[in-house]
Amino acid sequence: MPTLSLQDLQRIVAQSWDEVLDWLVQKPRICRLARPEQQIVFELAQRLRASIRRDFAEPRWDRLFFDTSSYVVSESTLVDSAGRRPPILIDAHQLYGLGPTPRREPLAPDIAVAVHVLRAEHELLDIDEDGRPRHQAWSPRSMRVQGILLEERVREFEQLSELACAEGYLFVVYSNEARRKTAVDNRDVASWAAWKEASPTLWTASRRFRPRNALRHLSPTR
Image 1 (spheres, one colour):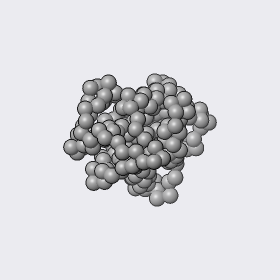
Image 2 (tube, helix red, strand yellow; image 1 turned 180 degrees about the vertical axis):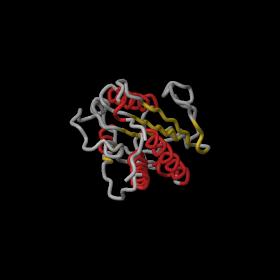
Image 3 (cartoon, helix red, strand yellow; image 1 turned 90 degrees about the horizontal axis):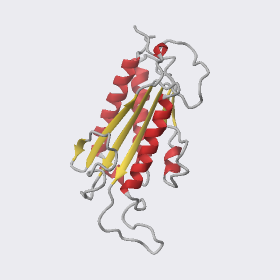
Image 4 (cartoon, one colour; image 1 turned 135 degrees about the vertical axis):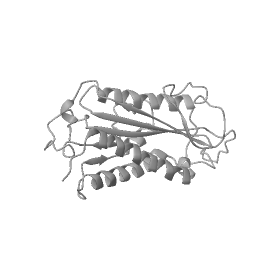
């Protein structure tokens, strides 16, 4: 059974995300769902698991933990969003050939991955008799508020990097089907991001979080 290095896993994460982006461009309606992050993260987790099993030559490897319940919480209040876990957690000790996972902080996986979606609202909003949007599955939300939730994700990963998390990956999708100028375009949201155009109405950015404390035992050489 081969072992994988941290560089191998970095490549797998990057390739899996590229595959998800290709899939997303072909399915733009995903960003119209009430919580598109859940579907996008599901697709990413499936590709990560399949790629690791293939490269690790172990079809039964199952140390990828997937939970999108935090996205449900994030749709309620900013207070409730505190203390969320990244939806994809990977225990990589077996992949590195290091044996059983040692006892560590409960929120300190070897690799953590999350996706955040920013969406521009349409200029006109039609409300039904129950006060719900008639032609979209989510309620209007200020782009700056969406940006605050994104910064919560950033802080979450920064906290993980101070514990025992070897790598963190935050992928951001910006959907602007209305083609409006928003706080994202004005750089008031995600000012750290270098946006890449995936389609005329879809942009993406990513941020990698490295560990604050050196964990050389997690990066074995071959």
